[in-house]
Image (cartoon, rainbow, N blue to C red; front, side):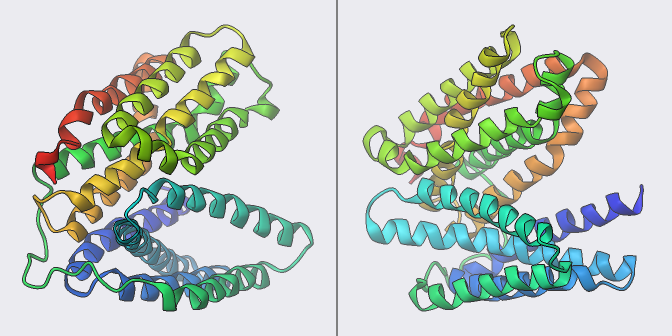
Length: 339
């Protein structure tokens, strides 16, 4: 494997390792101290990336970058669950929408700084400083709870948590596949020029963010079962349009349907993971987060393997087939008996 591939692998290994550990730590100490510590660590690692003096040192920094990111991801979802429970109304989709908006904003801000020829270290330092400022504002308002003293520090996903974890992996697999392979899918079909090949994923991302901004209102009226059921059916409709359409505008609308349909599946899965009674909530949320992240990491490789054997269209039909699991399992994972 090339050094660049190994460096990217360091981020993934660090993230997955930390996600498992975060579930254990949050079971004992709650989400607040982990969220504070991982936020600070993430900002420090971001600032250190440009000053790595060698490939091994960069690998260690990227492992730490991935680890703090993974711990932060789990801790944020646990904190979001606590805030949602305290508010008494659906809020998870809105939190995930803001996560997406933050990703867009961060990429745009960093691009702007580099376009203005600000040195890379100064640019990353500015981003880290903004993160530190946001943390100072948020820290006094974070809820300190979620610990389950006396509970197990580790437990393999079981029961409804195992089903939730599989559904999260499938949904993130779809997102990862669209990120890495959608451009090739539509350019191979000669629907758009190569220079515009990223437009499909852009449409998907915008639709997903818009869907999440309205997702809490939707979940409050439809309930978790119908949100999962109809969301998955809309996404499946998007796959059918994407893979059978003959005109560019029609095919691109398929990306919008997939984004809108998938938008609120993951927020509902996290909510149900925190509400179930088969495992401590911190371990359940960590399990769902870890399998979801593994889906994003495995997505490009799985699609590439299937595409080499059967073609890219067949690989995307496989994604649609996997997504059918969501409406099939929607009733069981939202049943009152799972709470």
